[in-house]
Structure formats: C-alpha cells, structure tokens
Amino acid sequence: MITSNYFDRNVGCKVCDFSPPSAAARPPPSLGSPAFCNRSFYIRRLEKMAEEDSKPLNYIPEVILKKRKSSEAFALRKKAQFQNKNFQSRNSKDFIKKPEDFILEYRSKELDLIRMKRRVKRKLPELLTTNSNKPLIIIRIQGKKDMHPKTRKVLYSLGLRRIFSAVFVKPTEGILAKLQRVEPYVTYGYPNLKSIKELIYKNGHSKIEKRKVPLTDNNIIEQELGQFGILCIEDMVHQIYNVGPHFKEIVRFLWPFQLNKPIEGLKGSKALYKDGGDTGNREDLINELINKMN
Image (cartoon, rainbow, N blue to C red; front, side, top):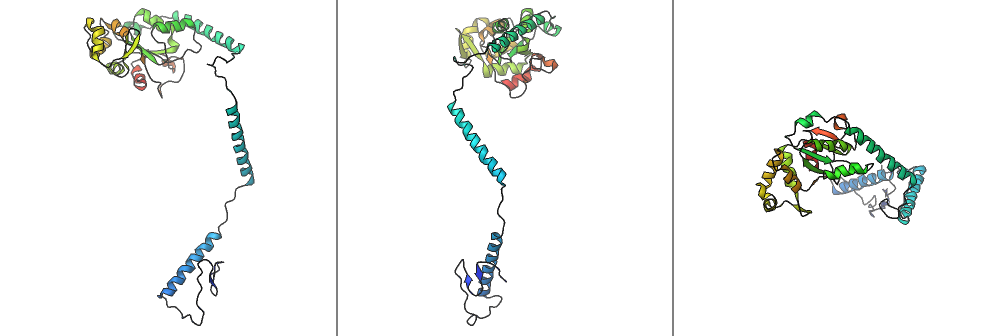
C-alpha cells in the first residue's frame, strides 16, 4: 500500500500527471505485462521520494552559529586595522630605538668581547696543529647580532663578510688563533676531494680587479694563474686538496663561496658541535654540511 503524499490510486501521480484509467475499463494486469512493470516502476520511485523527504535536516547549534559570525567579524575588523595602520620597520630611518635597546645591545657586545678574550687563553687543539698538510674550510653560520666590532674585524680578515659564506685556509697557527676568536660564529673541518670539486664547479667565482667573475672558462684561470702552472679547474682542485705550493695564490684568486641555508643540520646554537651545538670543529663531518648547503 502506497502512503506517499505524491500518489493516490484513484487520482494518480501529482508529480508526473499520471492518471490511472477507471476500474471498469482497467483490466487486471498480468505479472509480465508492460502496464504492471510501469506501475511498479512509479511505485518504487514514489516510495524512494517519500523516504528522502522523511530524512531529518542537519542541525547546527545556535552557539556555534553565533561564534562563527563573531569570529568572521573579528577577522574583518583586524584586516581593516592592519591595512590602515602604518608599521615602522626596524630598518627604516623613522624607527625610534628605545634606550633599553641600546643598553641591551652594549651589554651583549661587551659580553662577547669578554668571552673572546677567554677563548684566546686556551691552548690550541693538537688535532689541528698536527694536520697541517690538510686544507680547512671555514663556514660562517651566525649573523652579526650581539657581535663585538673586534670579532667582526677578525671575520672580515678571514673573508667571511656574509652569513653562510665559506673559504679555504691552510691550518697555520695564525689561522687557528683567529678561529678561536670567532668560534661561536663559524664551523670548520677537513673537506674531501669530492666536496672541494663540487664547491668550485657549482659555486666557483674568481676575484678579478675586485669584481666577482664566474668560472665559466678555463681561459680566465690561465690568464690569472698561468704563471704558476695552473691552467684549469682540475689544477686548482689538486693544489687545494694537497695544500700545494701555490695554495695561497689560488685562495686569493677565488671569491668566498656563498652557500645556501640548509633545511636541516643547524640548530641556531652557539655551543660547540661536540657539545651538541653547531659551531666549532667538525673534522670530517663537515662534508655532510657542505652537501646540504651546496
């Protein structure tokens, strides 16, 4: 028996305007006749429509609706305030620095100078002094925040003027003394042949008349270093890896390498690498950091 609001046996279907014939003119349909099939199709369709109409509507509590409306209004209000407000950047000329900022900056720089003087009094590690036949690579991993001018001067003398810059050096006593002064701002170690070659091929630039020139042609090397018997990049790699007699000339010829910030590998700590930090001597593990930054 159909209990739908859309169909009545005597009137017909209110949706598709189907009206059944009268009872006298309507013969009883057989099981396989088309009339029986069409009637059963309409009956199933109307039953399905009745079930869909009987489903309850989705109910959202009034508290959630009010909260949603208030959060949207708050977001629009904050956006309008942000657009109307003129923010002062610390790098702009109109930025006013507070007196306590000057005091904190001065104390941080003085503390950095005191720590540098303490590090100078330490004894040089024997591992660095004995391995003088291996080249060192120094990578600057800290910025100039809380840095004393004397520390910055030592970094500039090493050629590390920008963060994530790197240079090759020969581990002499003078270089190791400078490393002790700037240890919280750099990390260093012994690069292998693969790292040296990839650094020069990928990020190699020469210094010609105080200009940065990419190493795209061996003719540049031959013009500047041909008098020392160095004609190509492979000769430079050989001299650097073996700390050859013309190591100093090649280092002066090369522009400091500008590396990328590693996604992983740096924690932003000024503690030594052996103590769980980022700075200091990494020995042969420096090659892992070079691969991430090159």
